[in-house]
Image (cartoon, rainbow, N blue to C red; front, side):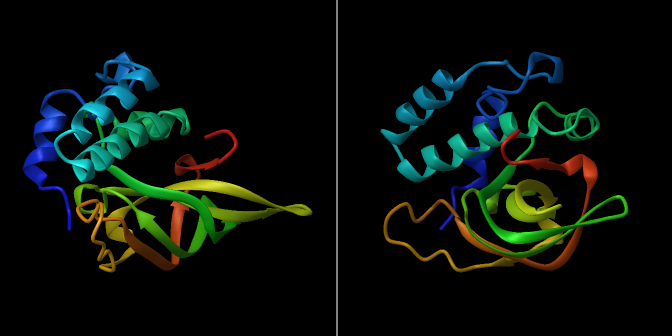
Length: 179
């Protein structure tokens, strides 16, 4: 129901997870063509591993769109981070001092078993409109629901996560449009 950690560790040691991370953080600074080709090649052997590793690669690239202080914190002592997630804004976020109080339930967080962080989407009320935001949250701060029982792509650990209210610092929040 999850890609073995050994496979993810090997992909990280081979530089795959950091392929799209800027060189300034120790990655290769490569583009989407490498992401797509890597997934295509890996899928010849294991579609779930390809899916999981592709998400881990892409989510590192997404993390590099957060505020600069968040990026520096994430990549201070490593060239890649492990991030699962799903950006559908199915939760809510409320602006509070120092960040956002985020609540909700998010399905299909591929690569959850192999990640320390989760990216989720939530709607934040700003003036007269609800604005979709992405929030990067430590997986340990969320409730993980072991509900991924699929016959196809069964090893993607695309579980549901939820929160009754987690405080997300400003630096780990960004409008999805900018993300």
